[in-house]
Every structure is written in C-alpha cells, then in structure tokens.
Image (cartoon, rainbow, N blue to C red):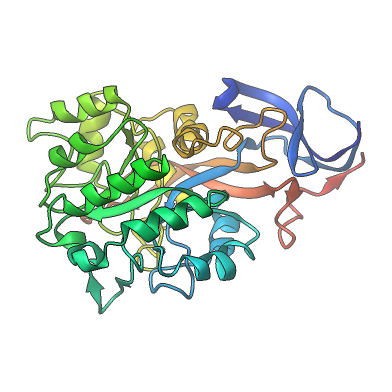
Length: 387
C-alpha cells in the first residue's frame, strides 16, 4: 500500500487506543491508513523523532464566525498556530444567521469547523468591547421552532444546541432560556451545551437540569457560581451530575477559569472531561490565548500529560458523538498534531488576575489536516525524508 504521508519516529500519545510510545502513523485520502512500527511506502515522509504526536486537537469551545459576529476570530489562522484541527463554534450563530456562517466561514475554511447552534435567533450578537448585550435576556429572541428546523437540516456541521444563562447572558430570566433550549435538544435528538456565568441561575440549578451527554461549559469558573465550596470540597450536586453523565468542559475564555477553583477540583480528583479555550476576540490576547496555553495550565497544575491530551482529543470527540474524531486508529479522520513540551519558567494568568509560574508549556510544532501537511510556511523543521 502506498500512503500519502507518514509521520515517522514520534512519541505517539493516542488515549483512544491507550497508546503512548514511539510508532509511525500514516495517512491516505484524508484518513489514518497506518499505525505501526517501520511503516513504509509513502509519497511523503516527515521525521518527527523527538516530538509528541497526538490525534488532531479538538477545541470544543471557540467563536469563529469571523466577520459575522464581533467576537469571531479567524479559524484557519488560530487553528494552524495552536495545533487545533477541529474548532467547535459554540453558539456564535443562531437560526437567523446560520446560513451566512455556513456559506461564508465553515465551508471555505481549511480547518474543520463544527458548531452548536444557538437557540437565540441571532446567536451571540452583542458581545464586544463597548456593547455587551446578553442575547438570552430577551425572550422575544428565543426561536425554538426555527432552531430545531435549522439543526435538523444541517447535521453535517451542527452537533448540538447552545444556550447561555446567567446574569450577564440572560439577566433576570433564570432558567427560562435553558428550558427552551432543552426542548429543542429533545426535539432534534442532540446534546446541549450550556454556558453559565454569575447567578441567577445557580450552578446547582443548571446542572440539575442537564441530561446525560449534555455539556456544562465554564465548569471551573470562579466565585460566584463555582463548583466547589469555601471548604474546598466539590459540591454534591456536581458529583451527582457527573455520575448522571453530564460532561464538564473548561471553556476558559475571558471570565470563566480560575486557578483557585481548579486547585480545589483537582485536589478532590475531579478533573475536567474536556479542556477548551473559549477563544474569541476579547481573550485571544489573554488570558485564554489558545488551546495549547489552556492545556499547559492543567499540565502545570498536576494533570498527567496523557489525561490532558485525552481531554483535548478523544473526550471531546465523545462529547461531539463523533468517534472518528480525536483518534489515530486506522480509518479515523486524517488529523494529527505535533507538539513539544518545553521546560522552563512560564507565566500563566487566570481570569481574575492570579498568576501561576509553571515549569512546562505545550508548543504546537505542526499539523496534519485531512491527511495533508498543513504548515506550508513552516516545513523546515520537519523536512521531507527519502521515502
């Protein structure tokens, strides 16, 4: 068999196969076509010895409706630099502007883009430096009928329903928007992702309503509406929700991740299911920056390397209900990320301004996307070798 490309000699960490060791990975026609020692027969071979190879990173929480919303960033630029091969947009668009998002951003993009469709008609339309309007605060903007119709007709890209609740996102409406979104999710048979910020509603109210497979994003946010108590224990409602199958996603962003909360959660053995950046225009220059920076924070706070990779690959794929993502099994999507873990002193900051000096940092060194090397301007580090 002739492969299109082989990554040779890298330390491959693929939690979907419980594999951590030196092995070759091959890609053909946009899929993984080989996984084994000393693979041969390829049009292109890249020597990645000394580097870490993982399944293509999935950022489960991003905002990439560039040009259509004020918070949107360019998906290709972000993904190429941060090692992300699948960017999941979480509610930038609603049923009223989905068509533009699909036609003008998702379809032309090189990077893979999936999306949670917002139950609010125009998605997150008022999120900017000077204008900040919570789209879930006006029930006239809730559009469940069109949301269900659009989601059903666009299952190739839409993976679930998004809603934002909390003082900033929904004002005094409490759980009303969440109730509407849950009805849509039930109607179309899709999972829900729920944003939470300051109360009302409370963290406990929100997770009590979520179903198995639903995602709570901003799960390790600071007080108020943190998942832990003043005594540093995990709230019983949080533990019960995990047992029920609710998925806990980081969604770092501008205001939704704190070291204090994370220390308490990790000390209790409660690791996040998924690590995501919630990167958008107001946090791409800090404090979130990107996916690999968010992953680095967890690595420095005690999560194992393999668990951090799992939370950015296979776990995210399971949340999406797309097992062909986040894996290097033969037949999976042909995406891979090449990483290094630098050692030194690195300054990290959370959303409340606390700094943490970490000793390690993930750096994205290269990407295979859809079975092809995706760094045409940065190929000197991994030159082609004789096939």
